[in-house]
Image (cartoon, rainbow, N blue to C red; front, side, top):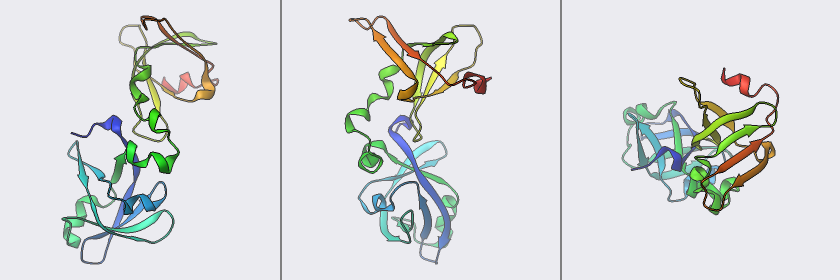
Length: 185
């Protein structure tokens, strides 16, 4: 089963091209990735389903005509039209200059207590959303009924990371831009 944390948004299917199942696609990075034997992942009723390209015809640096295996007519392309597609983070690492050692780091910060230089204690990292190119820390304040706070993971915001030897105490100190926490209100 493909998990959301292991994928990244890769582009969007646009309109069908011709009658034999080709689709115009817009790719968020070099369309050369579609020519590899990597799955193109589509959310089908909440389940991430892999499809494979049968053929790829580049139209430009970021657009192509793609024929998916098993999609053989204009009628069969309809469920894909204007739909976002994803790829596995490990497959696109070289195209996004992601260090392969960092691909599995998403859960590394779960459990850290987050502090800001101005606001003090914010909450605890409950999850990390890496489904887009901009990773987000999902921070849960300790106050009852408080909503999750979304903080962009940007190394420039981090002033220090502290952890005890046994990892029982984890702390991330941030210097967030003015007004960033207000965006969550």
